[in-house]
Image 1 (cartoon, rainbow, N blue to C red):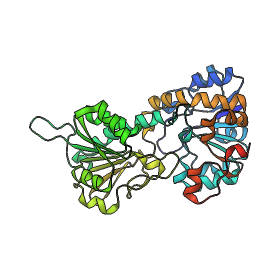
Image 2: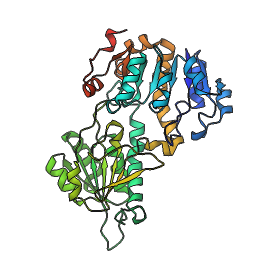
Image 3: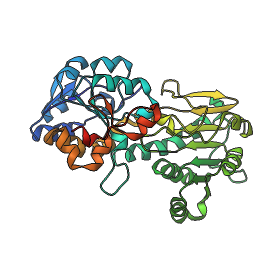
Image 4: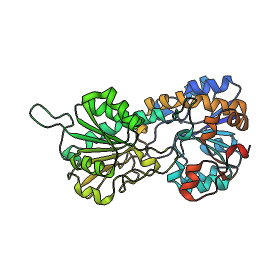
Length: 370
């Protein structure tokens, strides 16, 4: 199979879909790998490294989209790339379609075989290709939230850790999954008062067990959310319904009960966000203010730490990509039910229930198509 690696063109996205070591693995499996010039520079990988690994460098993305049987990316195609989508080609990347009707329509119209990292499930459960970015985004949410709490950026002027004789900041985390766990590690490690909410009692028990008296766990009810955010200096949105649009846990009217200059970092923005006032921002313009509350809603947070993110991501995506490339799409999907969960669109049909539900589309089981 011919594998194509294009440079990411989303705003300030410096990650890349394959490292030179990944390219070597594809080449050794008998694949031809085409790499766009400078595709990996943002993550610290030079063209010469890709060439040494067995890749062929091409000068522009259009040639790679046209020639490759499978395109490997990090982020979903942006509007200027929709014209490259074609029937039968495998697109292997993050998609987050439940919050993106235009891309969903483009993929269905093109007949692309779209495999989403974020809905692939592991042999023992979980979302192996989403987890490393959740870990990074959770940790970064605290780091960025702490920065935007500074008065320079319009925040309350509060230090997360406090100092002797001065109160610590209150951090509220909505969701106790991969993002929430990692946000909790960093926020508690920095000395903040941390409250984490979830609807899974077993998960709360687990978090309570590992963090002990350093944090407060609460069952996620409307009353508990309102009580927690009223005291919060930093609120982190860490809710995930795999492949589905995120429910709104904090409404516009709820901002009135929050402290002016408090910060919201909504990591759930890729799936629509769990705060009603969330809309996607970029690393170039990361924040905006609504009713006195600073919102940080960068849709590709891990792109800022591109080398760490690229290596962490490709460690998990490579095995599934190699299966697709060496076995072929149909066989790979039939043999791995977790990979089958990653197929969101195929042959003009929506093959992931969460996306179909989001847009009232007809759902088609992938195994019935192949």
